[in-house]
Length: 426
Image (cartoon, rainbow, N blue to C red; front, top):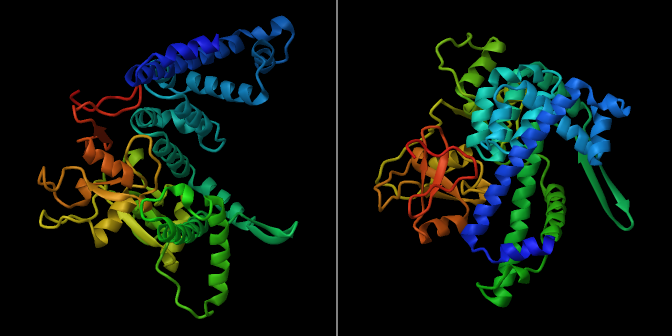
């Protein structure tokens, strides 16, 4: 009974409960891989014909009472594990998660470039094992964009052509809708909106401090997050209405990251530079063609932005190190601060998704304890709570040769998801 299982778990300490969760996750991965193998074998032998089903999908619905969505997802995973070299082994062994396989399966189903995914399967599976899911999804979509530049450009043009917006009255309130546009306009609008939402939050925190003191809990904020977002939209409209038409536009709110190879290849396609033949190959995880938040941007849009000067471009070399200051400087300020926040999109602590613009810069090799220099190569992004937790618990972090930032407990054990490859030498 479920209640008995729950009671058994109540007797476990935190470490034992964590171990049990990790065991179940590995079992889930194994079962998913075996289920995919059963589906493939069933389809191969035409098992659905035995009971008169029209296809393997009907057999699955009949056997497991699955929804159409369940059937579609499991069939897609089965085809992926059957056709992408190494994918089935990685899932069965528990080295990659089910979510990573779903993302791989989604990319494989791309009609324009999915057939090419086997060519990069070793890289993508290695990334699936070493990267957190959000970073892995960025890498997969980066590959899709690079594998089908013409298709990505056509899709971007269609989305731009379909742009629309409306502001209507609905039951005495506002019904505000907008869709379409481009990756750049999306990033720009998101950036503006986030800045106004943050301004509304600061208004609330100031009011709370004035009324209840600096240590008052978040529950005493005057407005909910939803209310602040609505009021931020209103503030944007009012700000626009009160700004002169000939006013100077603000500093760029969109930063586009692109690696050196991709940028020079882009310039070569437009006959601005000769085709580069002296650049080292770049791994998929190091290719960049996206906003600071990880939103993929078609290279053609980057070319347009370069010509019009609407956004700020940041071109990375294969090292990814932008600036370096010596040990005399303790604080990350100015250009180096901006550079690091562009290189790292969010808090690096395992499981945290706080964006880098709300995070704090931290020395991986401590400035005082380890004589760590204030440089982009020694910089990390942590949200405020994890930055304090790291120092309070004596934790530390290292950037491994494979590019991963690994956090370690005081006793030296790495904080890794179940199934992940340990750092070299462990």
